Image 1 (tube, each protein chain N blue to C red):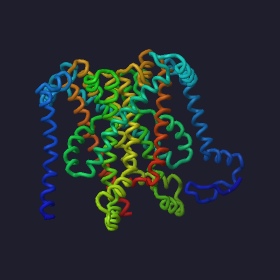
Image 2: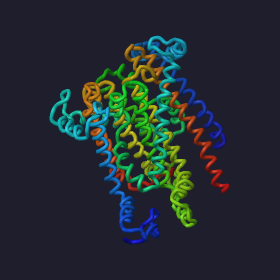
Image 3: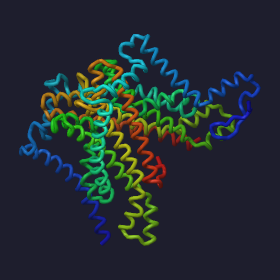
Image 4: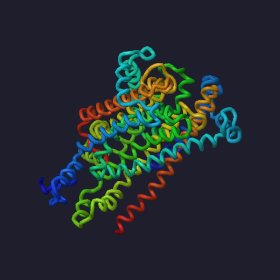
Length: 285
Length: 268
């Protein structure tokens, strides 16, 4: 056993107990090994869950991990209200994509215009600030009243949810561009159009893209909320069906699928980000 | 010439926002008054105002006064939020500094993290019913995530030079954690508080829309069931206003606390 371990800061420091017997040293080493701790954590969690689902007074309300897995496999084969798991998943994703596309198609240009023109900003910002603090989900009732419980009402909510972060981020992204960059390009003799193309847009793009990422995850939350309130398809409908028919395995299974989808969306976007704006630097806090 | 435009510009920029807001409300009122937008679909601002005054004293037709709805929503949100802070912030701070804490908590946290807050609603209702406990659980589950992330990132971003210096002077792990990591994480923690609050408030409204017997979200749902657009709009406005006020309060507290921190840093 080496008497030197790497400290958190990367410097080599002397192990605190080089004279201890190897047993103790081994345990301490294990406790500093992240992979081992991760393993303990996950196994411990699953065991605890299994135990709680089998032996505690909550057993009736709690599916075991194994039951959840079986339920998920079952749903991929058997249809639930006319659609299997993939059908429901596609129904949700389709709504998100349409709503997100519309929301960012309105939000991004509006945000850019507001950042570039003070007059447009003065005109739009007060009304926007009025709507901003209202959670998109609170539009559900009005949206159902206006569009019925079909696709339109759900997409409307997603549009509202995606519009706000898309607009705010493109607005702030452009406004907070380092003024030194403008000074530099102006000194090189650039006109307004060149400033816009060579400084404003590239420098504001990372923030704008971050806004789109937020918009997409907000959209994912909104579609679930909309489906919980009234729908015949989608993952949100699946878990509310589990609630209404007292099938906890379906609820938890649905949550697992929702979480995985959300994770995949975030992961894909962060990969896309590396491709579309490689010049991105971490924004100062 | 340039002086003239400088004088002229701010004036028009001062007027336009008011024109915009007043124009917006006038247009809204006119659209409903003239019947271009049917009365069952949208209420005019004046109707909403009248209902607001009426609901202050009249529990009809949804069973509670406006203030009762607001108080119930606030109690649910703040209780869940408070619990999320109590658990999330210390957990995040510990995860940022101690390897054992991170190793044990990280995988569980990464499992919960991608679940959108509203997806907890059916499970919470199934477990706890539509009362206070279920709502508090939902709020807790969604608000705890940003608390942990921000506290964790805050500790991670503390200046390594300070940590190495403290080490050189013989500070223990715990001392470094308390004296350096926690204070330098504070601004990030407050950022997390704001995010968590906005999230908690949104999620609460969603929860109340789906299952509740009181609260502002319930007011909105009842408005839809009774085909009363004025109730819906009133509920939405109240939700927005309350969320805004809480945000301002947190901002004030943050400014006070972090200002103290900076002073302490300078004097020592």
